[in-house]
Length: 623
Ligand SMILES: Cc1ncc(COP(=O)(O)O)c(C=O)c1O
Image (cartoon, rainbow, N blue to C red; front, side, top):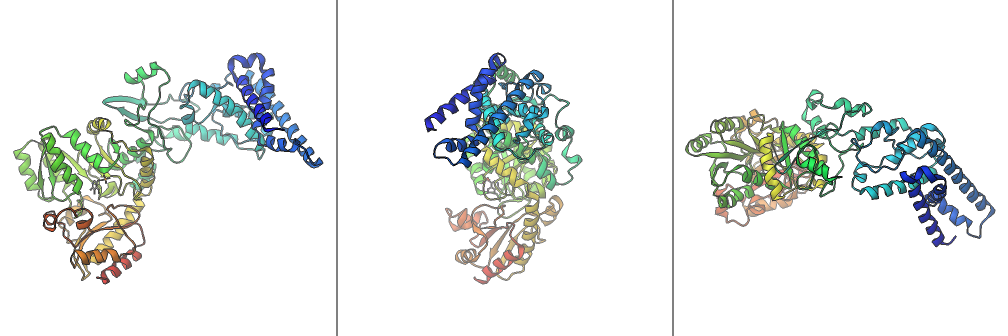
């Protein structure tokens, strides 16, 4: 048969199927349109293409028999299907193409028998009543995120085309009988929408909550309102499950959180939009204000930090700069510490003064200096890393929080080096905790992100400015952070252990002058670190016995770590700060920050300890 005929039949078939399932037409003249539908089904069926080839001469007699068999089989099944459809239409008036994609309430469940049956084609099942339920329900249910993104009209047409495709597929996959019951349960689980906190701009929005229903999936229904802590006792389990199955506002039966790549969210009617604006309805609105994938990552971090709220942003720098801009008023004063990530220092020294914001810089251990500033000035915020970059100094979070709170000063800790597993800054008394999620949280050297966690009130203030400044994290990046966090406890355990053991080896090595690691008794805040941390992290800084070039020679002799600027990932990374981060300054200017030419910052990945030890020892031998 010529190709144009095939095309023509396909188009006619599809149009036929559209008419067949249009509610206004279906009741009256379904028989006529059935024939269009038959064409649609046959032309959509892969068997048709075989058949098409077979009926073009020359054909062997065996081929002809096969073709005839195929056509007869398809026709029989179409007939069975149409019979099933007409009885189904009577028994279940809801058997119609769905124009309302709102799975959370638009179509009452009792109207949708076996709603949510996962499709597994089975021609035989079409002749049974229960299978008809299954077929009708699978036709009625398209993936919600797919359906909700289509216009009403497009959805209706898609549904109809989908019917033909589904039927055709079922006939071409004429295999074993599927377990419709368990599949139905699985998809129903997906249809349950868990509560979700959303805010947009400066508007606090209500909670997205699906009305409770008797036929909801047991698994999710049973877990509603259950606190993670009632059955997840450790951070490792919380890092895996928090925010996802137990709280995710995404309709899906996937184990993993879907990446919702959308820049905006639609409203079905203006009335819905007004309800949203007037806070009677919860919804996402625009990608810069929130994203369901990102919410899952935020929930995970909140659970680990014991925070009411977390805001995930495009980078660690984004988190700390927006936090400072949001919380410190123009003309305000902050206190920070000497040792810190250079770009944070640059922001405090050069950008904040444009808003008239000044800073007092103190040694991380000098609480006396902190007290003095607090007594002299109205200090809005004390902001420090703990441990610090690159000397891993520690700040007594409990003590500084007490001192600051007495004066109404907020405390924000950049806990990037600690991770939420080794240190709980909020539990120690801090108001806010910031992380560069780029490092341990994501943990795979493959994504940038930053977050700030704390009480809703403070995080909302940061969020409102963030919505204006616009450093939104991409949902794909949020997904990588979610995925990374599932192994956070395993990685951090390994990194803590390797770093501790190698720090001890380095300290005893004749070619190493000094080691900076809070897990060593020689560290100035060793006792404090032991009190406020449960592990000391995967970064060890040390000075080798040599000058800039000797140190570079050591770096170049290492075979395992990458020479790169980051830390906290699976791959070990080595960095000579004098070159990597301070090369634009003279040697004496670098020395003001304690950055000597022979300083090395070594971030241990999750490689085998013995391999790393052997590599470091051989590199030290090389100098
Ligand atoms: C302690 C600390 N905080 C914040 C940042 C900035 O994070 P990001 O690179 O994700 O912007 C860094 C970067 O290295 C850091 O070391």
